[in-house]
Amino acid sequence: MEKTPILIAEDDRMFRVLLQSWLEDRGYQVTVAEDGQQAWERLQSEEAPKLVILDWMMPGMTGPEICRRLRSQTNARYRYVLLLTARSDKQDLVAGLEAGADDYLSKPFDALELHARLNVGLRILDLQEQLLSAQEALRFEATHDPLSGVWNRGAILQALEREIERARRMQTTLGAIMLDLDNFKKVNDVHGHLAGDEVLRASAHRIAQGVRIYDLVGRYGGEEFLVLAPGCVPPALLQQAERIRASLAEPINSSAGQIIISASIGVVGADLARAATLNSRSLVHAADQAMYQAKAKGKNRVELGALEEAGVVA
Image 1 (cartoon, rainbow, N blue to C red):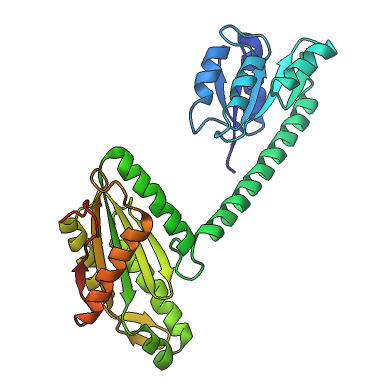
Image 2 (tube, rainbow, N blue to C red; image 1 turned 120 degrees about the vertical axis):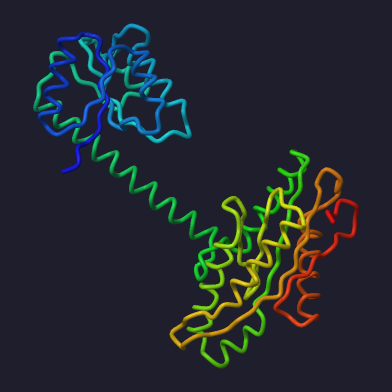
């Protein structure tokens, strides 16, 4: 059975050893801090336990002070904090909770009460994980194409806006690859829409496999895909597009048997240090026009496009 990680911060050595022993006997994996500063340093790690027991008064940093710092980290995963305190004044306890503690326990603690309070913390942390998983699923659903699994049209165009701004800020280049699966309607007509969907999924997977890890792939519409390649210039873009073209030309296994497809691909690269007025529309238009040139020249090929303003990378 996997042990539950927990961090305890306690400056009293005898109490710390007693608490650690009690927790380990009940299946917890204990990380120990001997003062407040050490506890704070332990909590900066991504792997730090999400269940935390803090003594109120410690050298270096008090328990409430650690709580305040934790709650100010809005991007960090939530940690459930139980304050141990010898204080019994309600005003002090309220101050501890207002500092960000989730619960408190008076010293000397009752073992059964500590066990029950830790179980409450574990339930809350479990609910939070479920909430985050659901939130991530909704985010993925909102930004990804449900059929192919790559970015959807809205998300890839938003990413294009961000990449243009990033490239302009960093005075670097941005490449775009627009591709269209050739004669895809024939696939649906001859083999059926189920096989057509399988071809789209397989094609999206091959495109994603053919790009760099930091490139972005989106389904632009129908059987069209858009690839964004930050920092990539035409010689490398053409090589990348050619690899994708060759990969897509390999037979695809489907429920209707092997299907052979090809793609017409247009590429364009822009130097954002020189293309002051470049926008997403003009970049997509240039890549789209290059893709149609590839179709006009016989399909299953790659063509380099040109932007209408200075800033095209040749």
